[in-house]
Amino acid sequence: MNAAHLAHQTALRLKESDARGMNATLHWSREVLDREAARIDAAPAGPLTGVAIAIKDNIVTSDMPTTCASKILEGYLSPYEATVITRLRAAGAMIACKANLDEFAMGSSTENSAFGRVQHPLFPDRVPGGSSGGSAALVGAGVVPVALGSETGGSVRQPAAFCGVVGVKPTYGRVSRFGLVAFGSSLDCVSVFGRTVDDAARVLAAIEGLDPLDATTFDRAPMGQVAGRSDLKGVVVGLPKEYFPADLDAGVRAACDRAIARLRELGAEVREVSLPHTRYAVPAYYIVNPAEAAANLARFDGVRYGPRHVGPAGDVRALYQATRGQGFGPEVRRRILIGTFVLSAGYADQYYRRAQAVRRRICNDFDQVFASGVDLLFTPTTPRPAFKAGAKSADPVQMYLEDIFVAPASLAGVPAMSIPIGRDEGLPIGGQLIAPRFAEGPMLAAASAMERMIAAEAEVRA
Amino acid sequence: MTIGAGEVRHVAQLAELAIAEADVPALAEQLEGIVAFVGQLSELDISPDELAVNLGPDQVRLRADVVAPIPMTRGPGSFAPLFEEGFFVVPRLGGMAEE
Image (cartoon, rainbow over all chains, first blue to last red; front, top):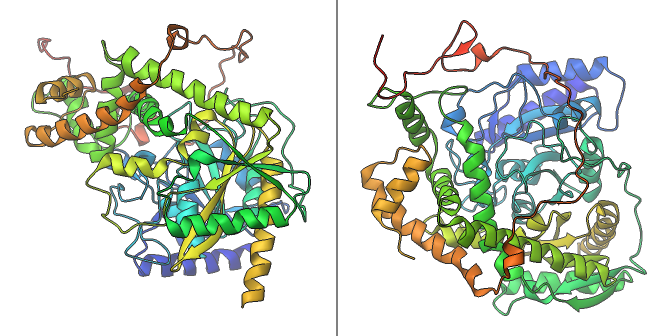
């Protein structure tokens, strides 16, 4: 397929998804697609030539606006592009659109976008997960084969599970954050969605690696192409008992049981393990994350970007307060207030420092399990499948608890991914693999073997 | 712990965030719920050593101290709300007399 044809096909699919009200995109245009096509045709073929990719709208692009789904950045056109965008273009990919998200990536349902909620690709009355819900829905609906999202605490794995696609969060530091609008800087990771494990792995291979513009990237040998494997002989898979509580959704448990049986059939040695601080991950996360968010979002003050609102007093503080008060939506305001509170005089020791200590313990839990001879962990990605829109919006804590199985790997900085492992009443269910730092290769290879076995079984049933 | 309207207003001031007076009671209730939830961490027996500031590894990798401007496709005037003669323009500080 030549690039002009790819642009045409992509435009048709984007138009169709917009027309049915999925609301998964915040910006795309035929003009940008055609420009992308001309650029691709003029360049030598790369590993992603012929691949259209959606980009979460908190990753800056210099030819399309970047809003973070917030009114405070409405219409903002970045003067530079993110390292991951430059690398995708160099690999031949077509940057197709900017995808909707929870405002500033704060949320687990993509209901917090200032530009309207995103619909689940299969069940419009349900949520696609979040915060990268637009990217997940576009891949789930077959609009694009791959998409970039970002993770701070599970924002790719959870929507991947809800939408029945693959979502990969790399090790913190494998992929440059330059040009990813900062949210929780010690947690943020550009992450990848794909229809298949191989698709996601190809995108990750194109964007990974040291970047002089992000001091937290590591100078390591590239992951390269993932070698497929037909079995898992010699691989030890741990099942952390804390991830399989008695009240786990019955459909999720049944799908996990089947996936664990497949791991055994593939030759893996499966054993129960313990990560004792798991239940403290979400509380620790909802201290560290808002604290970092409150600091990072201080830059949005009506001086350098976006619309400004001049408050009644007309001075500079009134400008800050009015711009931020009117520009940020309810969840962003809540996180800024919580973050400011836990860092404020008298509370920093009680909350922030304690959370950092708990984060260290969570890291140690993973390190100890992996040091004991376990190669990978397998868990459910989410406690239940996609829920109905509005079901959790009234209670922030209930929404935060959706992150219970994904927050720990984010706090520890280890790579983790979600793959589709079955359905319950049509709703996709995701299984999570977690690996030691920089072991994305073995994690993706194991996921690929599981994926092949699941596909083969589906074929037999059909 | 209890979070009242005064605490919400104080934190909002620290965060330079205008909040409508009508929103304060609901925000106080939500923040109290969140603070109670994250307060579960107090169940853990954390030693003073663990609470100490972690200075990180002995050998911290440093970037070269080189000023390398990021090439920009357009200037700040294209995205700033008010940009004149090379400066971001802001209102006067509160309390300063007009010249």
